[in-house]
Image 1: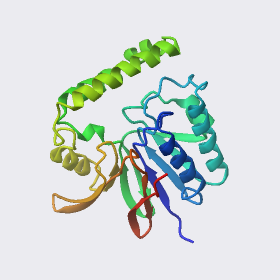
Image 2: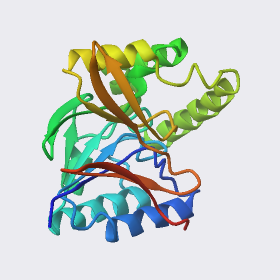
Image 3: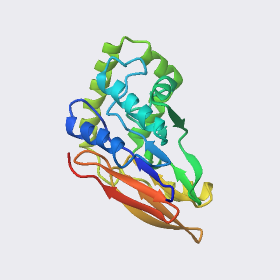
Length: 244
């Protein structure tokens, strides 16, 4: 039996979305079993207040489920998104997962492949890029994590409310990838296959850059129902899960 790898992103797991949480655990117990690797390319969680927030039953259960999958022989890889950028080594150890840099380049079943969350490609959204830089500054992260967990949760809720309000004033085009940014990334990394999430616009795109053809797979979100990308030596295919 040939080996295969699976890719997911933008699940936005939260206790207020029990159907998607149930579907996620079903995915780990079903389609994910037998894969060589499961790659989570960001925004697994709706938010992450810090690795010390393990009194939250959902956070604990997700880590335990990942660890169980690893014990069965599937490696788990985690790349930060914009919602869960504070996931750290403590969570990774509990989950038996490996943290990935963004971007990460690898040979995937014989094909050069570049993995990204995808938000750095959305260069037209200037306000978001400014916030991204702020949120990733070590001093700002240290200030946030120094607060009690309850205060962190309150700050996150404020950010979520502001983010929802700001999105209403943005066009879909601004929140999508910038074509030149995509071309530049493909050029810098040798015209690989690109897999990313973030934009919530699942699709397969073919780019021709400097006379080189490169495929870009965009992963779907899990707001209504889930989906995943399955890749093996023959290529990739997007697979939808049944609704919970």
